[in-house]
Structure formats: structure tokens, C-alpha cells
Image (tube, rainbow, N blue to C red; front, side, top):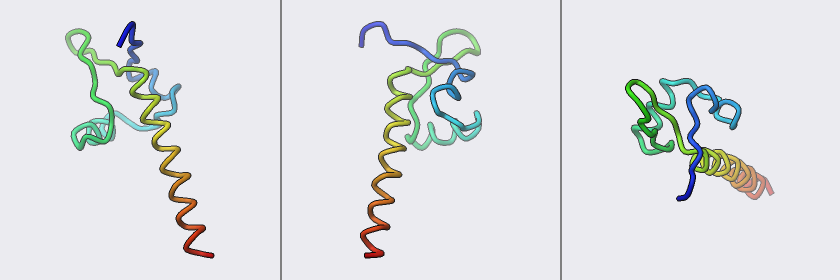
Length: 74
């Protein structure tokens, strides 16, 4: 990965992540959210591309779930 962009927590909302710190911590521990990158003492960030992929996957799941519900109703 060349020149990855790192996002601090405060920038996650701008990228479509509308979760609080505790929820992100839980999802990370469960392997359901990208892992943070330690960048300094008491400072972490996330790889922008991984966050974008996570948001895209959430949107894809929604589309897939809606299609499945529609098929069952038919």
C-alpha cells in the first residue's frame, strides 16, 4: 500500500461512519471493523481505504438484504 491516508476518529463521521468510540471498539474487537493504527502515544487513526471499503460493504449488505426481502414477498 503506497501513501495510505490515515483518518483520526474525528474524520470518520465525514467518511460515513456514524458510530461512537465504544461501538467502534466493540466492532473492532469482534473483527467487524477495520483495525486502528497507533500513530503516537494516546493517538490512533484508521486507514482511509479500509474505512471506505467497510462503508461500501455496509451499503452492499443493505442492497442484498432488500433484494432478499423482496424475493420472499413475491
